Length: 474
Image 1: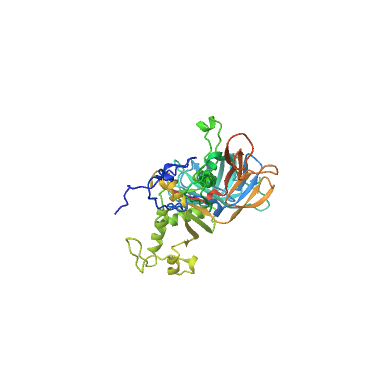
Image 2 (image 1 turned 90 degrees about the vertical axis):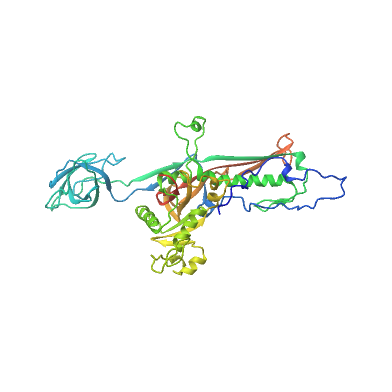
């Protein structure tokens, strides 16, 4: 039986600055000899309501002195082009190729280098040597095979990579040299603010409800609860802003209004990383395709997959169907394809007892639930299979070496980390201050206490090609 939509869950916690009728008994009738029996302590019906912890688990925080963070990431070591064309005829002994790959303005092919050349449609291939380079994107080859060109070039595209070189005796060396290729990325911090205000008169009012918050604050003064919840909400926004932020597009209203935005984790991985567009992988063949992509990227040995509840169950069901373990509604057999539970000394029962916290399939994958994707007040309340709905994020474990502009040298950095604005005179990692004339403050004649919160930060997603975003939509 499906769970009914009514009654539903509340989405609005009513974060008001005043005591609400829903929080207090509204009529104490002292003419009535009977008094209500009350529970003083507030019942925490939603458990821990905060959603932050993701960045604390996988990243670090470090200061920055600038409006812009820049870093360099290594390019590929070897040279390969996948959109080459030629007008060669079948069995031709020589051929001219033009490189048409996007972004290539000057090829790295030199005379004397040996090439592997494959037809992208038929798979036929040749091996050849470069005899001349005629311009920035065109070169001529001579084939090694007796039969010459394995395919006619008209209407075909070719993939070409360099595997070595050959020179005649008594000849000069290689003409020209290659420079190392770097990819330069940047991000800009954004200023995040919040505020809680209460007037001095209400601060002197005590209630009968004993309140509590996730950070352990308790008491009978209602404004303390509201201030603590504002603080917790702000701390959540510090993380969710880093996850969801997007840069203001060139023709956007936000840019026209003077806002620049920032590159959050989802934005970066969606544009520079790897994307699984079918919701969740549910079989080993699905994971094999992910492993095949990781082989073409950085090949990081250990990875953590942060998943929503449905994704987590899909992984559990997939692993339960291996090694003869029955999965939901299917039932495995002893002859089923086996998986390696190498993370648990290859003990199937131990893996089951841990709820399939991880598995190895070419790489180590550790699974953990991500509350942000399950919480109904955040992404957990969105259309489950809607275009762009995110089901999980795979983050490489460990750190990578990058050139740090401020330090002026290579440094080890976590793949995911936060940079906040700070200097000797100003630290904007997490600022909070009180203004007004109540609650110990004496900064103005305002009969209130205003608690202000501010942070200026951005997230740096290094090596986005090692991340995988799981979502719906091509």
